[in-house]
Image 1 (cartoon, rainbow, N blue to C red):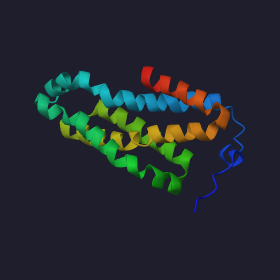
Image 2: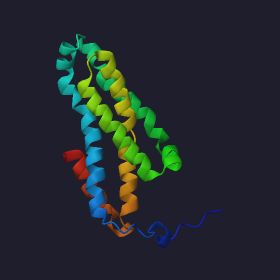
Image 3: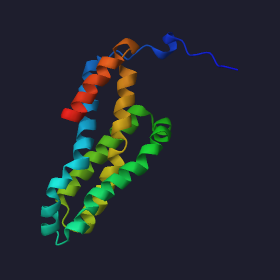
Image 4: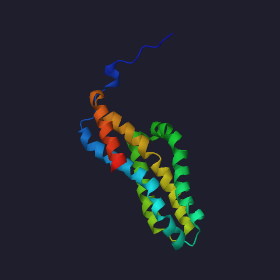
Length: 158
């Protein structure tokens, strides 16, 4: 009744020719930016409320809208990767995240800022799982522990 466990050879398939330590900082920095963007807006909420003529309570939707959109995308990541491919999906998420970040900074009104934060959350939702799966694909099995430790340090500490 038990299925045979996959052999180590299957788990440690040949890797691309590119040095994985070149890939690691790129995906780790993208994941760091997503984590940073989740929380850094807390500092700006009073300024957002003042400059956008909203209350502090209304301005918290800038944070909440991002987190909701991000949470909606997380369960869809596996499906999206199977449709678009890991690299293409990750690059698309980075593009959506980056452009919407710029548009958040340029938003002339509160409703536009909220819409841009939702779009930013949708793009950011694919960065964490995408980065981790790219890291796993880039490193051999015997180096994945070290690689993920470095990745974690970059994401948490910056």
